[in-house]
Image (cartoon, rainbow, N blue to C red; front, top):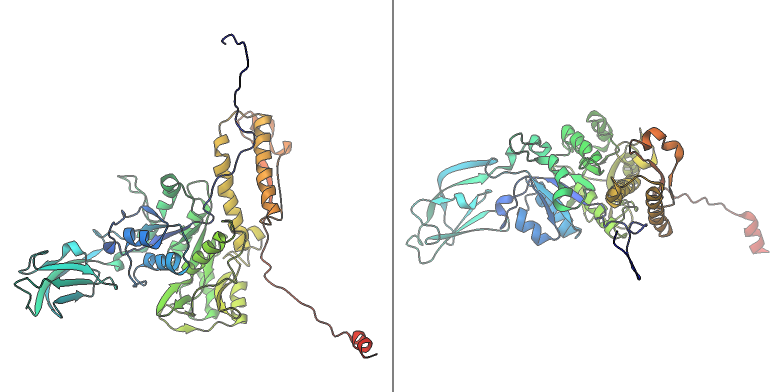
Length: 475
């Protein structure tokens, strides 16, 4: 050490660790996008973080054909209807794989325009005898259909029909295996639901909710979703939103049998029935629930402690997949809630989400598993704890280091109690949890009590006729 003479100032690491920034309860949608309509298409099986509607449409495309394109439905629901962001989208439709070829046939020209009512891949279009750019231009209309416009200066401007061939994307070729995904043995690239594990490393955000509109009704897809939700990136937790198949459970009385038959009984699943509608649009209630959860979380300081139940669902009715309207009475909605199924109800204040229970209820009544908002808070705190204290991994194991973590965590938790986010909390290092064999092996365990508020799901007023008060008033 050099010889010192005078005054010196040095710094050391702050004993109290500041919290990390979180995205609340970030939605992740895995599904089929009309990628052929995108002006700047994102790669297939790649997580795309979108902060607004325009950004999503630019990278994923948009069409009102929600039946075939679940990601288009999610773009509309999250970014237009509920106006909540960010959202991560993972498109599995590959235009080079999920496509069909349509041979040359004649199309009538109406007003110097031919409209092809198909999901045409623009670059594949061939028109007999005409040259692109010189004789015609191509553009998609609001329905996602291709419009061929003949240039007025073209020698074919007066043609009454055109012979056109093309390739089109075919969303029907996307299977549940594309949604489930896997790891490519040659490239190591993840596909489908497996891509969820790449989100944090690539985008720096953590999945909170997982949805696959149009596919979650499949029991295998739902099981894989729950599995992924329980172990995101090997350390985090989320929950998955599952739709009851309304082609099988057409009545509320058939929902319980469907739920049990398909083994939708996990604490990592929120199951919904039936579908929602808005005008002529049919929306999966799983997507509506996730968007409502995201907006409720955003409106409460980005913390998911409030239940999304009894909140505006932004729909004007309920229906089955075939469009049949579904009437929902209070007793029916409560019956579904008692099965661990969330629905929507138009009772007071318009159509609102209705239900607090996860799919594990009623078999599992543990509050941390059975209540949606409590499960959300445990998941949220799970991700925060890891992100805040990851920097302490591999630091020297000492009493001072452990006390710094304990103090930091108690300060954070006490702030949440003071703001009403938690009812009670405590973090401590207990000798009984840390035997010598663990300590000398570099293992430490901290114990934490964590009590988020449960939803006040039933309020009872007791009324009594007070005869004595009546008599006194008449005296």
